[in-house]
Length: 118
Image (cartoon, rainbow, N blue to C red; front, side):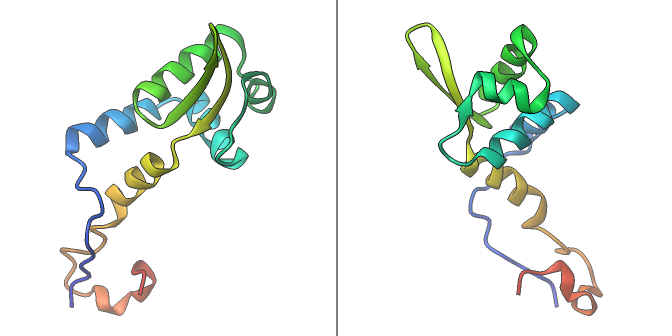
């Protein structure tokens, strides 16, 4: 029996590819993971730099790429960025892009229930 689950967001392949491309750097992935860990209120840019070891213009560059990909949100006061947070719904949608079709073409997947949500 094939596992079928509704796709909450039918993300186009090109959109998913651009979001995954934004994660194609160890530093950017580290930044996103730190933001996910920090919770929905986010953290200050200074604290983010301290947690990841990525600071200054390099951190700004990575945040710009992650924000453009829709994976990070930034809060500004005047000309300064005061905090950043993961865009959880986008991170979740990107994860679901990979797993919602789990085993859709697998003939013997009922033998491996650990691949299914329920």
